Length: 395
Ligand code: GLY
Image 1 (cartoon, protein in one colour):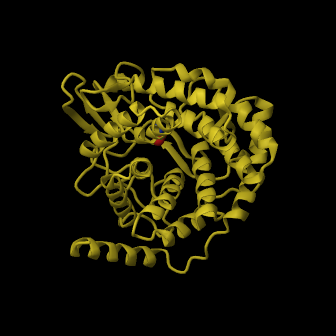
Image 2: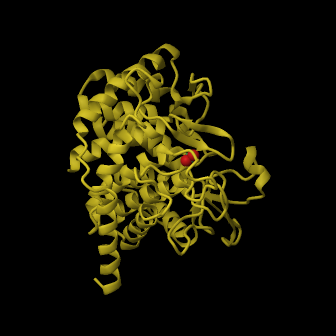
């Protein structure tokens, strides 16, 4: 290890233990039991509505997916799979199967890049836990649909469509968002399941192109990079859900950290480990990261400290850091303990029976779109349960 690397790792370790000093390690078993008690309430509501809960409205009523295509539709069934894995209670298996079944046909959708989120979190966890071959078929079909959006000239899977919805007003041709790193897990999994390397090759190409163009010198990332689909040239680097094009949207940093950590899991490519460590350093050492390590929705939001926090970003980050801790020579344990303790405190965790059954509160969907501000989100709960499961298994 060279001197500079040694020095920066030592400084990071000192900073990590300073900002997360003397934290009592969270009791993941107990927290999972508490999470289960709370999700029992949400499950009761979901059974009555026969629908998947996404968030709460301004009136604190449950906002249901309403059986349309929704990028978050896999998270509630995914949480049920994790609870089935934890408890062995058939009730959670039945719930996961019931709530993932209605959107199975979305595996044919070639109009959206979120198939990785949707199918890996639900059917993917289901297959990992049960080995049900019908779940494997769903994953393979979804991966086949997802790779139709890959453009070899660009070296990326197209995220949003440039000609539909609010995106059409932005003048993009081939927009790729950092969130798309999360969809690669499905492709790596399906390559392993089918022994066909084509999915993993596309995932690696996408990760390499993202590594080349999405990051600034300080290792923060842009949200959207738009490419010319004919030449592969970068047309612009922007944001859609962050505060400004040159700001650092908190959940975007979380997606990048989680995405490159999972790419390292499947490939052992050192450049993926390095960027994951560098993103973690950017995030954890940022002067605007509050002492409880729950970020504001954007690190450069103009009215910090009077800005909403984004609990979902913290839940994604802590789950990623637990995995990264197993790969890196840096110990992230002090900050992992601190983030999990903060998330599990009454500031962010609802009292059982309140919050309509969502576990965590105070996340942000998209402030520029005026959507889902300071609310629970099904993906915040999903990554929190995943983090507790990883913590229990790893430490
Ligand atoms: N992938 C959408 C979001 O993070 O809001």
